[in-house]
Length: 81
Image (cartoon, rainbow, N blue to C red):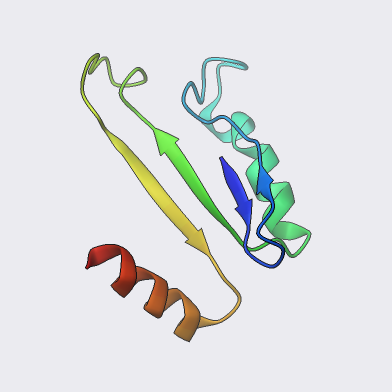
């Protein structure tokens, strides 16, 4: 899932099976890298449960890409609280 923070538009990018499409974790992350390289600010959610064989578990990461460090800090504080 990608959410463009500048417009609030949700961009669809599935990373739940990262590495399974091409056999490369790096290659399958290309769409997110392109979005950010074009100046996109986003939240990127990834699930690792299937990649690690942890079926039925909730293992993942939320990456926050913002141009302003202070905005990133406020978002992190909000999520943690």
